Length: 147
Image (cartoon, rainbow, N blue to C red):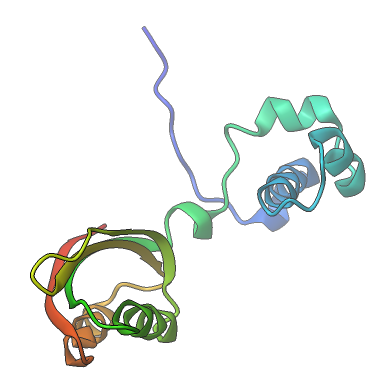
């Protein structure tokens, strides 16, 4: 019988240091802080073999479970600065923009799909997100999903 993967949440203070060091290496490499895994491992103080042993099994709780992804559709008027003002508005909500896909404007309007990550997705945060409709040039807004 095949063993199923089981996720648990454990305070990092009680775990061996190797796990937090693996997370540090992953972060360094993601942010281009080092040119190779070998140099990142050396900088953090973890062996490459330990890094490769745990890299696919160690994740930060905040990274995977504490932030929510929202997909939204906007219909924007074809006017200078409208998309920019929508992105600035999302930034004011501390949203991390993951993707922006804009179609070519037709009949003076362009469809835009935006995926973003919010640090919190309470009903209050989603209401704030919906208030993007008050911006000049935003013709329509639909929240497609909030995971």
